[in-house]
Image (tube, rainbow, N blue to C red; front, side):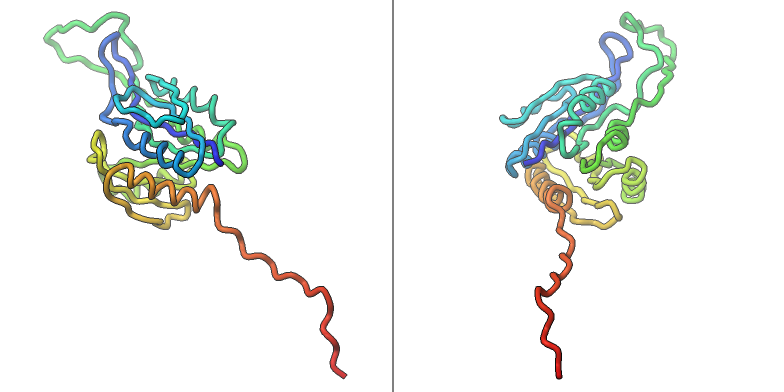
Length: 228
């Protein structure tokens, strides 16, 4: 049995006490992956941003709000796990300054200065220990496969799941599962739970129970009789 860390849902980066930057991630894929992991007999810990979805009974859920909080929670859990699946859609940008009170309309353009947030999956991949694996997700609009391959290398993942923006906040999805050498292991389409089962099957076969190398032939216990 493996202990798997799954990130799920969106994160929020606040502009003021009531407004924030975020995205449409629903957490459905994270929930589906957790269910698939439990179905294989694994232990699942989910670090989740704000979602309405219910996660499966039997998994541990750690709720967070911001990208920094998600990264911190993942770092706490990482040492006890065998692998990570980054299904969350963390907010990639945060304001340099967060207003302490609600921003008031002035009938003038509002200019925001944003900086990038930490890359959760790249950080976890860098901090993992020998034997731990990392699976990332890549949601792309332009040159999707090329960008997914770039992320696979840049984030030092063992596998990456390519999907499209149309998968956000829906019950169905289409994904391409790509392993470390760029080979496509499969393209799966359908309800997220069914797709998650297929993804988990690839993770199970390639990362949790990788094929054994061919065994070296045993030496004969006795030398064959020599001819006269």
